[in-house]
Image 1 (cartoon, helix red, strand yellow):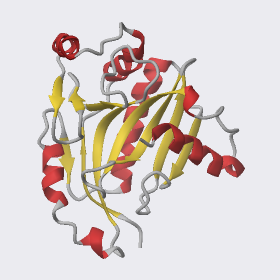
Image 2 (cartoon, rainbow, N blue to C red; image 1 turned 30 degrees about the horizontal axis):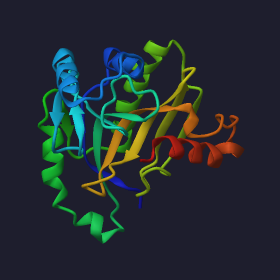
Image 3 (tube, helix red, strand yellow; image 1 turned 90 degrees about the horizontal axis):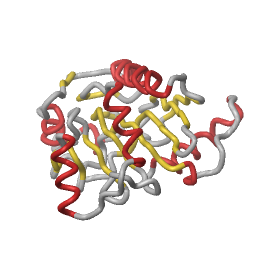
Length: 224
């Protein structure tokens, strides 16, 4: 039986939000506490202490976390912009089917400013959110993704959704589902990852015969 989607929360990813993410590594390096606070005030950001550990709430309403904590002017580490949260349920997995404790975590995402919710939802609803987000990335980068892959390899649970890959001269931008990395365990982020291309070898060739290699490439760039 395919995985169902108990709930979907999202805050639309806009072209302005994508442009801000793409520009983050190339500003002045900001890595001192007071300077980070000042940069946040300038951008209209806040701390996000609950939904993702050690993360920010951007001025566009998304949740951003960075491998080196501060994403400002840091060209070496990965940044992840979360614009959707999915609560999948595998009816054959008793732990997932009975994980009612996740309701409170989803409430936090659904009640965040600028976010909306759908309960129940479908994989098609998730794909629609991802497709609209892809349009925003394409608008900023000026081109369609280089690769697409429909797979559940990053999250499991049988929730196969589309991953899309773009590259700039320095970074990979990967749009798609990602493990929540805790504290939830079963929820799934819909996110735009920006990671240095040094994180994995060159993009695998196109074609079905290279899908496993592409899946490994995506995982290398997006897994913490």
